[in-house]
Structure formats: structure tokens, C-alpha cells
Length: 500
Image 1 (cartoon, rainbow, N blue to C red):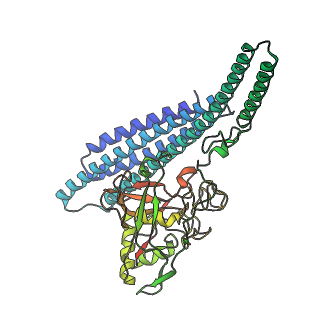
Image 2 (cartoon, one colour):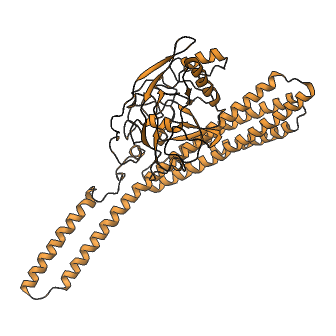
Image 3 (cartoon, rainbow, N blue to C red):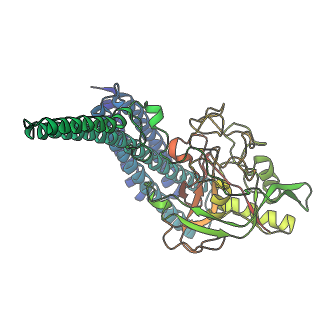
């Protein structure tokens, strides 16, 4: 039996044990017993996740392409997509099961309170652990969705490569048939007339010359017959991983610059975050219709009033002043160190409370940025995937493949890379960032003016940017995702905006 088969069998066995514990938890007579069952279920979920990760890695190794053959590449993509979709469904099922367990435990605790008018702290701890586990699973679910998106984009680029090859071959065949037809017609019209023969001969030579001229672009890949944004036939896999864009350099709006940099004083001492004052203006928000990102369409113009945004992501050092003043919990820094690194493992509610505290301390109105404010500041007048150009390059940001010392490992201290034209740092990579916006699944119906778009599903909050472990198209400035407001993960932080 193969290692994958054994791992899958073991995972199925653990899942059955998990389902049995769920059933026992429902029939538990005491909150203590239910809490113990929930803990056992949590341990099983951890083991299942570990096995699934191992199965996924083994699957990637066994299905990776070993040649440039188009059929092999397409098959490996299909296998990878099927595997990810399966993991996606399993993760969603786990989330639903955990939520049901939490609801069952809540009912049991309520019943116990009615009986005894008090509940031990151990059960409260179980509730917190279940909530954190649900948030973790939701984050894993979002990562699976992003990976599926990346695989689909790679498949699209491979299809474009095959299309270019096919079109070039068809055009060559058509020209060859045309020459053969002209040759046949010339021979059929041959007569024993010297003047006419000379005329036909000259015409035939001219046709051959024209045919040869037309064949040159097909054989050399000249711009005159290539479709927009072709992938070269000889491109390597690394080259085909690059986003398909039309322009070679980022197109900048005229006079893109900030209106100044400042810091507000805190009444408790010290200063608030470094703020960059941005001019009002109009920009194109979202992705064009030629790109397959439904949630980023339709692309539309948005006009904003002036506002200020923090130059850096809020750091552990800045957040710690708020935490000590309000007795909020200390976020886990994963052992990477706090200080100038962006604060992580804070949920949307805590980030919002930080802005309220900052408003009280400074006398100015601070809040989390809206989606449109965030994208305007991140693009800084550009219309390419990355504000610095069309290629990821090296050491432009901290991501999964950006060439920095922190790539895929951990967060970097804020300001470790060059800023965009507005002098705002880390709008690509490092950590994703909370926004104030509620979930809108597309830009359909979005207003053309105003710094905020009201409404939406506020049980989910929009998150922008990418993280230190993000790859490929997840790095674009138009990238959107969303999380439950209670989510705490090590790839998610925030920055702030101030009303001018």
C-alpha cells in the first residue's frame, strides 16, 4: 500500500473517531464532560489536518510535471485542482462541525449556569479554544481558495501558449495552401504566347515574393501577427508564472505625490503613527474585464476626498501602548519579535478599538481604511499588478517569492523595502490588512464618489493586500478577500486612516 493510501486510511479512521466524539458531546450530561469531549475532538482535528497536509504534499510530489509535454502539464494541473477542491470541501465541513460543537457546548454551559449559577473557568477556556480553532480553519479555507485561483491562472497561461502555437501553425498552413493554389492557377493559364507568358511569369514571381514576405512574420514571431500579450513559445515555466499585462512600465498619473508627513501627539505621552497626507483624486478601482477576477469587477472610476493614511502597518510597539492602556490581550508574535514588526493575531474588533483609542488620545478622527481608500493609496497612480512594475523582481517586498530574507518565513520590520510614489510602505506583502468595509462580492452598484461604500454583509469584513507567504497573482494591489471579524491569524494586521 502506498504512503498516500495509508495516510488517507488513517485520516478516515480519525474522522470517524471525531464524529463519534461529536455524538458523545451532544449526549453529555455535564459541561465538564462536554468540554473534555470537545478537547479530544480538537486534538483529532489537529491530527487530521496534519495528515491532510502530508497527503497534499505527497500528492504535489507525485503529480508534478517531469517534462514540458502539454498533456502532462494539463493533467497535473487538473489533479492539483481536484485535490485542492477536495481539501476545500473537507475544511468547510470541519468548520461547520466545529461551529456545531461550539453551539452544543454553549447550550450545555447555559444549562449548567441555570442549575448552579456558576461555571468553572475551564469551560470558558474551551470556548475560547474552539473559537480560535474555527478562525484558524477559516483562514486555511481562504488560503485554499487563493491557491485554487493561482492554479487556474497558471492553466490559463498554458492555454494562451498553446493558442499562440496553434494560430501560428494554422496561418503557416493557410499561406502554403494559397501559394500552391496560385501556382496551380498559373500553370493552368499557360498559353503559347510569348508576351502573355512573360506577364504570367512576372506575376508568379511577384506572388512568390509577396508570399515570402507574409511568411516572415509567422516564422519570426513579428509583432504584426502576434495577439496581445502572447506567451513566447520557448518560455520557461518561471516566465509563464508572470501576470499577463499589456504595458512594460507602470503608467503613472501626473504629479503623484503626498501633501506631507506628520504625527499626532498622544495625551498619555509620545506620538501616534506616522501619517501621510494624500490628495483627493479619481482613479480606476478593480481589475479590467479581461482578467478572471469576478470579485474585482466591474472596473470603475472612484473619486475620493483628501485623507491621511499611516505610512507603515501598525507595529507591535504602537499597539502595545493601546494594549497597556486598555488591558486588551497581548497578541502572539510567533517568536518572531515585536517592536517594529507589524502587529499580527489581532481581530477586526481589536483593530477598530485601537482606532477609537487613537481618536481619544489625539482629538482627531481615526478609523480603519475603506477598501477604496486602501486601493487608492496602494496603487499610488499606477495601473499594473505591482506599483513598481509588471514583474515581482527581487527584494521589492516580503512575499513567498520576492527574494527577501524573510520570504515565506515571517514578517519583516516595517519600512524594510522601498515605498510607493505616495511614500507608503508594504502595500504588497508582509501582512494582509483589515479594512472597515463590509463584504460586497463584486463592485456592481458601487458609487462613483465618496470615501466609503456603505452596506454589504457586515458579518464578514474585507481584507486587502497580501502576506509574507503569498505568491503570484495574490500580490496584486487589487486583490480582495474577507474574514469573520473574530479571525486572528499571523498573516493579518492593519493600518489606519485619519480624516483631514
